Amino acid sequence: MDAIKQKQTQLYQSIVFCDFDGTITEQDTLERVFNKFAPETWQPSREDLSSGKITVREAVTKTINSIGSSHYDDILDYTLTFSIRPGFEALLDFLESQNIPMVVLSGGIRGMVETRLGNLINRMLSVFAADVDTSRQYLRTNSAYEGKTELVDKVRVMKFFNAKQKVAIGDGITDFNMARAADLVFARGRLAGFMNENNLPCESWSDFFDIRDHLQAHFSNSKQG
Ligand SMILES: [Mg+2]
Image: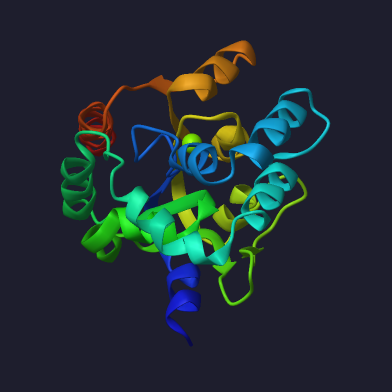
């Protein structure tokens, strides 16, 4: 059995599914990359996305496909300038002490996620994001888990994992389905607004210390109860 299959058939007590852009990172790294490397494609795509003419998958694919492959290394270097939200390592320390794995679910580019996470990647159970083919003149996306509207169908990926409790952490509209498929949701930004508008329960958070503290209390209560 290969390593990924083994991770997926194991039964976990809890798993944390965490978005990357605007969640682990303070800024939306993909949007910043698009504004810097492909503004002429991204700006109109963004408008079409806002007005509902195209999906996130279409807007992101179109923009990535307009970037010359020769820029890929510059994009990865630029990714290193984005800051990680405070408390991320403290949350990982806590999760490891409880044997709770984290899976990163990103609708962005794997190379960017891996570059920014650096050595922290070894502390993740898995990272799901879109791969990019740099062998042609322009970048091409290649996502094994592409959904109808997103480059990575987060709910589909969540179903690969077997856990009694699924925790979701996110910030954006593209995390809404992931949040609805989770038992406990930490939402900030537009995701929090969306959850509230739909009368769905969620915990608000501003940095990862908040999440660690909440989970610490949550798990000590459930052990007592
Ligand atoms: Mg996000």
